[in-house]
Length: 87
Image (cartoon, rainbow, N blue to C red):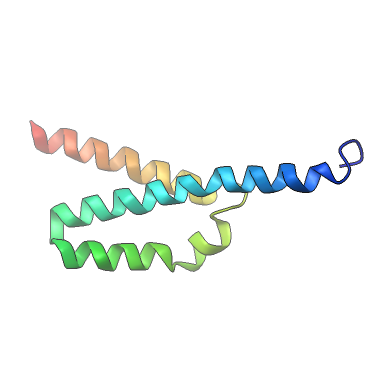
């Protein structure tokens, strides 16, 4: 921050914006998986729970890997489940 000065605020903002799509990916995967298992109402409930979860709201735009690891882990398990059920 000493070297970049005022520019460091914008660099931090851009970095936090880059973290938001990971939470969106997690929400989409949650929607797709619950739609396959429980139908449309289940997917609406899953989207609501994911979007208004205090963890996703608080940690979704941080540089820490908490919410991003949860999203990518959910994606990995979902793809593995799809691969197992396709056989």
